[in-house]
Length: 212
Image (cartoon, rainbow, N blue to C red; front, side, top):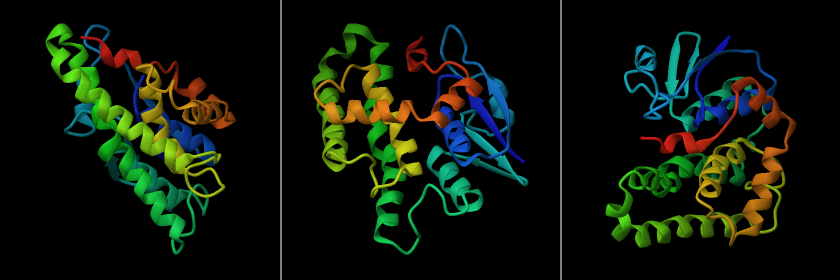
């Protein structure tokens, strides 16, 4: 059985969502952020040296990184669901979104979390940070256009992966100028599997990451 090590208010929420979309059986082990620092507890280091979540265990394998976990689960347990056919051009686009979400898009948002802890000292960097945030949101908005999903006409795991970027953007009130992204995020949140994942994983509030 799949075992997910899940940290509250974190990226691992989307792995729960993936499992629910695929209707998989899984064991969930939940960890709580430190109420003062917002950091993951040290117990996660006994699962993986980085002490981060999500961490997936399956048949003796220990896998980290959201994109890698999504790719692994869809390939090995998806039975052809939530990804385009591997020999299609759409598959290449799908893989690009899986990597882009964490490889490029999340950087300015995570910098915003850490710079927010510096108060006024971070003010000189805020214009550049805001520029990068909107550079990425503009790119996603243009790629989505008036489509329902990011890849073709079908919901895929790429939508799950990119959703965390948009959740972070909404936390920073950055989606106001991108109505198609706001509507897209709302569609993702109303999916039944997304709702089931929230019940299973508990409340999802990214502002917890901002605590000192």
